[in-house]
Image (cartoon, rainbow, N blue to C red):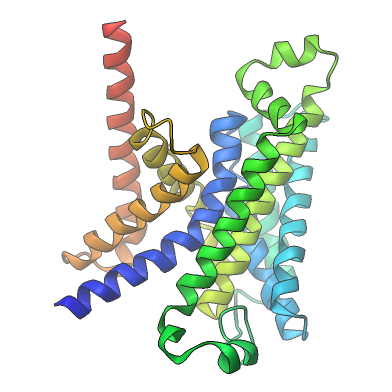
Length: 299
């Protein structure tokens, strides 16, 4: 029983931390920019496709993370340009990019499923095999994921405290104010979308290396999972001022994966994952809206 619980917690940490990087990207678009960016359903597998193709070609697996981030940032930039320059509504620009990326991801990978089990990844390589202590090897995936998530969180925290980061938050809160300062709010949006999709693509690259394969369907529901993680984290810790929002989002991702794991352990099939996600997300939205309604009624 204890071993089963331990394996459950380890699995939740692995999945939750992998998706936490993606949740940080969704946090930028949903909470900061107030932009319903559905292109993340395409940029998540984009990162995976780029990573596995490069790994098969012999590129260092660590380097593939940087390249995947840049690929995602490029996709986010194009999505932003469609919205800003072509004046397409935010929702539609994301749908257009998501749809286009499905074909692009297939073109990059060559097929809908690409295994890399025999290749070195950031989780399995000769360096770790040689220098990692034997007693830590069962936890190596969690350790590496934690380090990556921590680095990305600190980078995002640092960026949000720069001038560009303050402008990004201002665009989401009051775009008129940004315009009055003679600053192009469209340019700020494009930067935000590029950064967000870079995070999402990086998460896809990490996830594919962790799983040992690229699968075109991994992007399905990415936006929903990211939103659920953001809403859980930000609502749960909204009164805890000592916890940074980025930290709350990461915890939200872990809690979301914990809920999914419990649902599966109580008899639901793994094939019901999307159904579980939809039910959880609906419940989170209902509770969140109910809290907002109570706050307004008491004001």
